[in-house]
Length: 291
Ligand SMILES: [Ca+2]
Ligand SMILES: [Ca+2]
Image 1: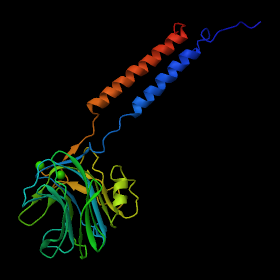
Image 2: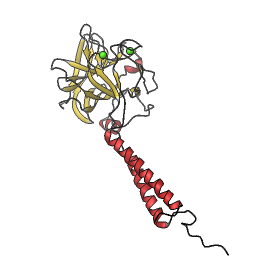
Image 3: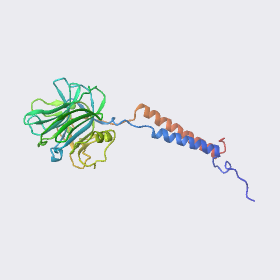
């Protein structure tokens, strides 16, 4: 006759213990999945004399345009000054475009032949320091638009052919004799060969892109965390160099590494404690001590 072993004698958890384990495992899964890192904890910090330079490419001078990025301004530009976020061309070049911070507002404009602000748009929002904003400027061949955090902040008619053979820079504008610099951080810089709609901007501003999205011609995530290259993830090889040389130099911006926040460390610690509790419970079940 087969002996009548109970589940506990066989080292298997009782029904109530299995419920406890399921509860703990479910709770642990929820806790482990809970940390949702803000989309703005890594990037490049520009110290006021730093830049990234991307060699000229025709892919960066499309007839229609969207320039977008996340920016965190450390020091506001003066009312007659500009801190340049993205710049293609300078005052003397035809068909230049710029995204900047001016006074306490964001600025998107197109320039031509010695005039740097033929068509200009200023955000109505007043910029605060040490705050991450998503800024986007679009040009559809007829109108300029500027958006901050997905909200339309301004529109103006425009008519200019974009295109010059100068480099594209992040954090810097190469105005001859009068360079302009950014004091602040950037991440997720994107250039498109089309004017994205407000809905399209809102749909992807809080997430990384795959890189193969139609019309994406330059995409610098700025999450490398080290090295001298800001890689273009759009497949167009518009890679950027940090600073004025391929080596470490005084114009290199600083990588901001993504590290767990204090609350995330707390969550990780709590998860480990709970995992340990599950192991102890399982051990007690095996040796027959669990309730
Ligand atoms: Ca360098
Ligand atoms: Ca520097």
